[in-house]
Every structure is written in structure tokens, then in C-alpha cells.
Image (cartoon, rainbow, N blue to C red; front, side, top):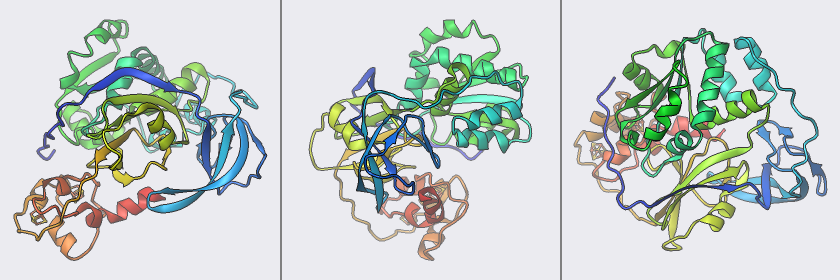
Length: 379
Ligand code: SF4
Ligand code: SF4
């Protein structure tokens, strides 16, 4: 494991620790690849490609949203607040891996199915409750607010894979805040809590497994969103239509944690809960290092855990001083400067953003070196 770095934390963050439950968005938006007509009725939990509708209501019109620098035509669905579901899913007890995969297909949990299917054998299950990016608290809030649900779900999975031990990994900086959950943990002697150092990229699969002294090839690592999705599917027999979102940044008066429905417009959530310091701001999705710049017209999907609203900042790129810091810091041993000068991306790039973070000349190296993976992310 390459020596990992500790990130400088922003000061003066005020967090509202009460999770706001935004169950009733006025509208949700569905990308228009699907064939609906205005006035058509959509039940909640309708599967449309890899999307599941999170409300029931009528298609009111199509609208163009500007997300990830491109225009996406979307159906705007007006919430009828009835939560009408066409057909309930029959809850089933899964006894083994194949059973589990078949059952999870009913919930459209394709990312989790892929993770499970890609492992030839699963010998360890780890809930990685680690927020690495500054301003991100979604994993920690999942751990501190849904501890019983996490334990129940992990215990269920341990039975499916006939394992005797599961792990919850969280940052050692959280140890004082999780004192109250340790007593509950005692009722699950098969689940261990491991405190790990607060270092950037420690939750990257290979780093985490190295640190926990287990093999990554037979370890299933789940994050907070996945654990909650599994809790709803396995324990309740329901589809989880919500996303736990941190909204933070140096342009917000208070960091808020909001449980919101999928495919809600970020703007609707921001307008409802966030007090801004100034109206001149930039929005970043999922962090300043690994994330990307966006606007408030983006849709909240299950892969979004953080929205950062920062004061607008203009940084001027200067000339490279050949200090070598970008190459020194790259955890994937990429010759970053060479790639940048040759305007060439690297398949090895993890888009971690450390090269941008360290560069004294403010050169946006990641945008060139990580381009291949950025493109993948968009599709
Ligand atoms: S963004 Fe890519 S090139 Fe830059 S440090 Fe991270 S892995 Fe290396
Ligand atoms: S960190 Fe920036 S200034 Fe230093 S070598 Fe890399 S590109 Fe040049």
C-alpha cells in the first residue's frame, strides 16, 4: 500500500445532525429514453432501464435539464402523493449466493449484484463506513442513525454466505461519536467494529483490505447506500427509493443531511433546506477531489452522496515548475506530468484528484489524465 495522505479539513463546519426526510418532492424526472406520453400514469416502483420510479404520478411534460455538461431530455412526473404501487414484491429468505442474486434482481440492485457476481467466493463482508472527501458525512450519518438496520443486514448476509464474522470499518476520528452504538454491537458477536486511520483513499478496496489484513479478491465491500438498499430488500421486502445526501460547502450556513427520493432535482432539495451565504457559487458532486463540477439541475441518483456548494473561485493555471509533486503523490504510480504534456489519459487513473490537489501551479491534471474514466462515468 502506497503511503496515503491526510487531507486538510475545512474549518468551521456547522452540521445539523438531524436527518431531514424529504419524502414528498413535487416532481421527479426520468431520462427520455423511455416511451411515455403526456398524461400517462406511472406507478411507484416502475422499472425503467436502471431507474425505479420513486413516486407515483402523471407525466406532465418533457423538459431539458443540463447535467454533466450535456442537455438531457427528461419526463417530468408530477407527484400525486398516493404512493400507488402496482404489484408488491414477495419477500423471500435467501439461502445462498444464487438465491440472493435472483432475489435482488426484483429490486433492480444491479450494482450490488455485479459486486457479488464478480467474486468467485466471498469470505469476508465489510461495511465500509468511511467518508473520505472533506465536507462529506453521509457514511457516518448512516452508521450513527441506522446502526440496527446495518447489523441486521450484515447478519443476514453472513448467514447467506455461511460466514462467521463481518466487519464494520469506520474512521478512528469517529470513535467518540459511536460510543452509544457499541453496546448494541454486543448483541451481534459475529460483527466486529474496526477503527481505521483518517487517510484519503483508505476505503479504496485494495487499501482497505490491506489495512484489515484480508484478501480483496474474496471480500465484499458495501457502502452505506448499498447497505440500506439491502436492508429494505432483504429485511423488509421493499424497494429503497431514497438517497442519504450531505449538502455542505463553504457557501452554506449549515451542513444538512437529507434523505431524499431518487430522481429529484437537486435544486428542489437545495431551495427547501439550504441557506446560502452568497448567490455566486459552484456546485460539486461527490467531493472536491473525486467529484465533478455540476449545476443545480442535476438529478439525485443513488450514486450521489454529497453536494458541495462552494463560493465561486477563479483559479488561474500557471506554468509547470517541474516540481514532481504530482507524480510523487499519485497512488497509482502514473507519470502524471508526462501524460499531461502528451495530452494522454491513463487507464490506471482512479480519478482521485490528488495531482490537482497538490499542484502548486493549479494545473488541472486529472481532467486530462483521468479522461478515459471520466467518459466511462458519463455513460
Ligand atoms: S487523479 Fe489519476 S493521475 Fe491524478 S493522482 Fe489520482 S490516480 Fe494519479
Ligand atoms: S505538480 Fe504541477 S507544477 Fe509540479 S510537476 Fe506536476 S504539473 Fe508541474
